[in-house]
Image 1 (cartoon, rainbow, N blue to C red):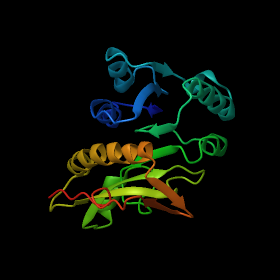
Image 2 (cartoon, one colour):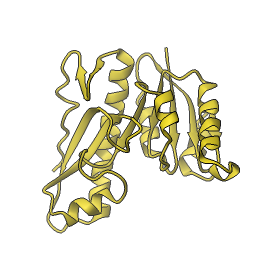
Image 3 (cartoon, rainbow, N blue to C red):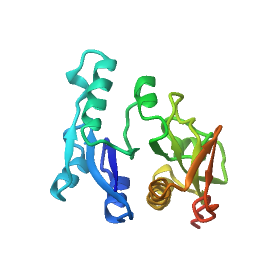
Image 4 (cartoon, one colour):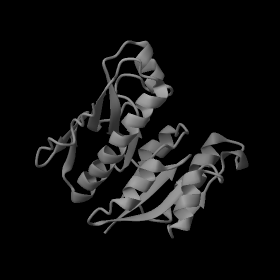
Length: 209
């Protein structure tokens, strides 16, 4: 059984998707948040999951916070750490500590639109499609090897909020599949490319009209 630790900052909808879609060979060991009042951490506690809150304001230095966060996570002996809407940039030390077992769900088709405000930026750029990416995390922001991507067409007169809602539906599907692939041992990283064994077709593109 592989231990999964999920990091969140807000409502935790991707965390909920993982909890509500049990993956063979995996257990959610803990949910950790950097905000005590995050909707997701409250939901996790109410549903019997082990929860932890590590508050940045309690640490004078960023490195001290990251060390405390790592110590908290490592209590659960994680095989995989999932950033599911964790809205804090992590240090190189943290990323390297979990190298090869740290994944993130990002609301754009990387390498396009790293960082924040991805949906509005896609609209402003006149893109015809948007989407989301699950990738391994490296010290460079939103630049690690891509596990899978979901594509969502942009509609006429779309708003950032409407687009975000449709992309989020795909995020839930994509993240569960990526974690299942990791747990089953079907992912191999060669250079900056992730290979699926057997080759995954359904996880490379999810289209919503």
